[in-house]
Length: 218
Image (tube, rainbow, N blue to C red; front, top):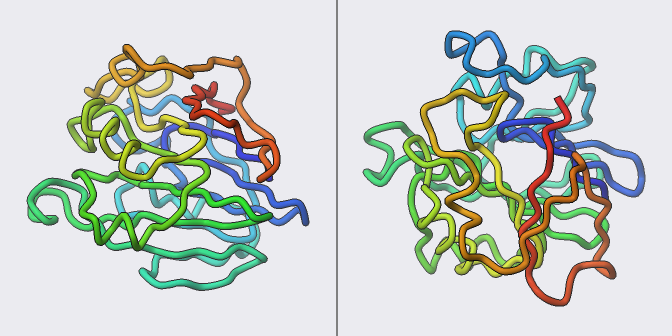
């Protein structure tokens, strides 16, 4: 499996069979020019959408005819096992910003959890619904999502081998949210390899947990 961070909350996951899954495609024309990532140029087999905000649901820009998955159920598409788990975009059970779907995606024996714009810590029931997580894709910028402290606790709840932060302020995302540094502060196992993608297999997962900060591809 290859996981490439395109930017914001958008990742391309490529299976060993060459099938591709895209998460939360963003719209660079939304939010008054505060998303400076390059426009997406992707033709995935399947797309997951955590919620219908413009920075997470720009399926119209994608090439081909990908299957769009938003359902909170388990389904098998293009060789990917995809389970949607109902969560919220805020701490008021969706009253402030609506619903959010977290996805557990399995391919090549590796379990990836994409939390979308999760706005709260997880109940034990949701932790059990998500199940085993090898790779966690987690928002850390706060305000619209969980912040650094909450993200730390969610990471501890799920216990991944690899955590990849997303949805944080950087030179291509000018949202009024925090950068990645508050989340990284004081943590062991932080790596900045200076690349946009990782090749991951069940066999090469680290023995001790790692937090890997990728560079946006776009």
